[in-house]
Length: 442
Image 1 (cartoon, one colour):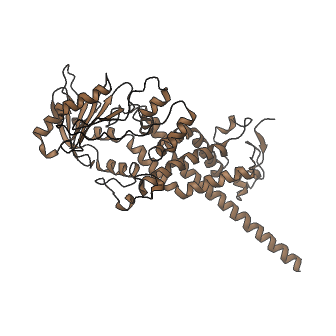
Image 2 (cartoon, rainbow, N blue to C red; image 1 turned 30 degrees about the vertical axis):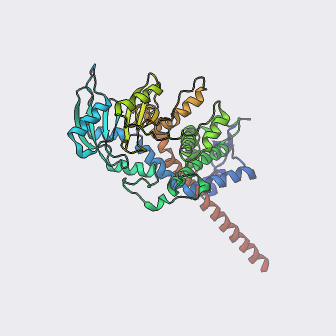
Image 3 (cartoon, one colour; image 1 turned 30 degrees about the horizontal axis):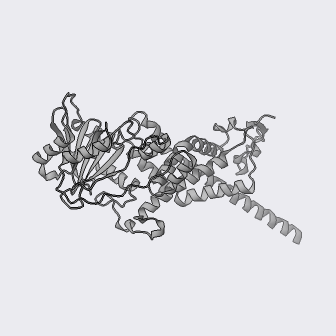
């Protein structure tokens, strides 16, 4: 039998809500009406109420993330004069750019530099992202301009999406969200970060439960990828919700897993339970050395010796003059999932400023499975933020990133329409029961 059945208008959701055609039944081709068993109804209720409970927060997280996909591109569009790069056979090094800015603009209190698609961004104190940057062209050795690296409203989006308003120095900071949670939640877990992790778990649940609810069976699979027309707003919104949801599941599930992995350990454990390789804890910091303070060049040589063939993508100084001070180096080596981000370099090496050793977040692991190398190199970060691709392909991330808005709208309209229909049916049943009681009493 065909998966398409001949039904009448009276069988449609519009008719069930009291909108029957005045000319009588109209025969139309439609999908068969699905019947839901107790287990499937449980999934539907759990999916619905989880969405309603945290849906607005999740849509806020999704829309701010969509904006941040193009945060750096927006900054470049607003100030294109800061980003010219002059080809040169002998470009200025990152250390030279850092010293140039310190000599000419000491008020910036420059503490670091990073390569952003050829331009050196020389940055101020790391404890605040509102600092003013110097934009250096390494080809000419000149400063293209000085100003805020990102617009203020993009900084607000960062504080919402990345920090749950817990990053001091960024617009919208809320101190109460930095409240530490008991140790059972994990070390250094705050209320804001826990909320972001929960939203990642929620997204995983919505993807899995949505796929279970959507699954039509093999016979009706082909007809489930479409939107029925001429059947009223309820059917249209229901089909849109199902279609957009199932098409977006791969991206939404990726965001849910990677988002949860930023705050919890179990996503990494689940990843390596399913794929070859093993999870690694962050390396401990080295024991502080007692020798004289290393120069920036000496510390850079130590970092590059740990990764032969790598190139420096970024440098930061973490109070190297102190006994517990250090230098940080982001390195290019092989494929870089952060290439199109303003924090390029997939490998990070911290070097104790007094000769105490290094803290290598991506040590060389000869023979390690590719799945382990991708995780250790932060490939999942690049997938989450879209920095693995340039601006044009990133439109795919943008479209799927905005899909929760459409899912939220259609899910709400379907729920409201169905609730209204249920209320109308209960009202009609009560009225019919009252009429029967009245007739029986006569």
